[in-house]
Image 1 (cartoon, helix red, strand yellow):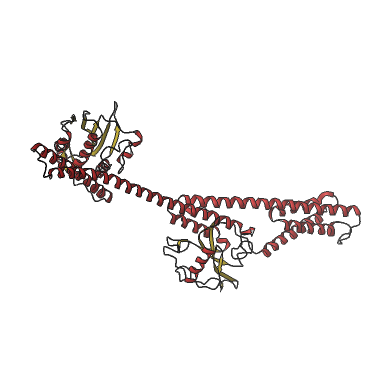
Image 2: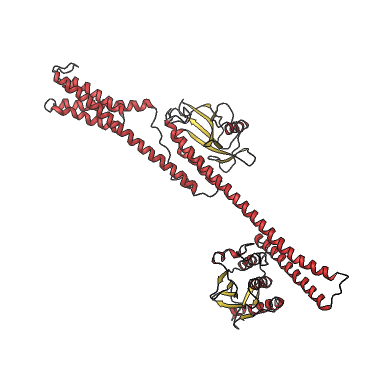
Length: 559
């Protein structure tokens, strides 16, 4: 995975301890003897009394590069070789002069102390380097997981990181098991399965469930792995290497992923413990409890990975909760708005119809006509509400496709104003329509509805004496149509949200309306490739503008 390219792995041991001690011994003995031979051959002692300090350079070099064992051994070899080859009587370990005894033991003490100091410095440098490497590993883990949005990809980053970082410690595969909605542990991420879901054996499933409940690590010895495409060996099986006769142990460990006292899942590690490559200090297969300082970084890494998993899981849950809250709020708004907007016209229709049906009352023709107009008006209102609901549903489902035809914009506006005369009869309406407006490719019925909704919105939120202005103009390759009023305007904080479903500007809840009209306008305009927005006018009021793309007609193109 590209996200893991920068995550380093922990250092691998050079080999078994006996090999390291052997190399240290060879370097210490050969180095001390080489210096002794040079001093003896060049007869630099006793002509240069302090020539024994040359050995301190070797002790210092070995202590700072190889450690305390090599430094102390070189000091001891230097002590005896200097006495044997350079101090009278030669070729014996006896010393004739007492002052030479003192000088020799002072040299030995100085060499050992120098070696210890150099070794301590070397150890601290190694520790600082290791801590810096471990800090970088943890940083890269957090960085890589933060770059992913989905929980599954974050889990994939974690399992691949475990294998990449601890491969030198014997980790060959890593799997994360998390409980599903029913509480059953399921495989959520696996490092070596290539596109196929890892299948656990019944024994593994039972063990993982026990680890989850008891919060204890379990090593699987004699259970068989479920058949997999990538691996087919049994855990803790003793296999023979094709290269040598060393035994390689392969087995599983189930580790609870704990965060405080809470167990959030199970980590399944597939391990390989080869004595040729891993020692007791740096193998997860032997003595790797939390109290073992050699494997402390593994537990630190695991705790960091667990916190990453928990944060990702909590973020997913938070998003789900937020989605549910939004859904509930939308449902509540829908029920509140629709129930009110349905109940009001239905009540008016029922009242008018009941009045007409009263047998004991004789209504004159004017009263009957008034009741009939009220019924028609409220029925139209119901029809618009249901139409907006259906259109909003089709817009969100992508089923409302414009059936475009070339049509003059000025004729469209005049048609809309014509069928809206009952609503606009007491209003002052101003139109600004240049005579040279080109035709636009549009869906007549849908644009009719957009203009109808915008004009009705202006009528609903303005006083009867307030003028309404409808304007169309050509700006580049866009036809800009606007509906302006002199009402209270729109608060700046609501200018963007006013086109959301069921959104009502604060303080207008008492005004009739479902909060769907502007949302439908936005969906229809955007389906035409246009854009709609609202602005406040200087001197008061609001203006709603939308654009439609303008293309040349075939006749103009042919000309």
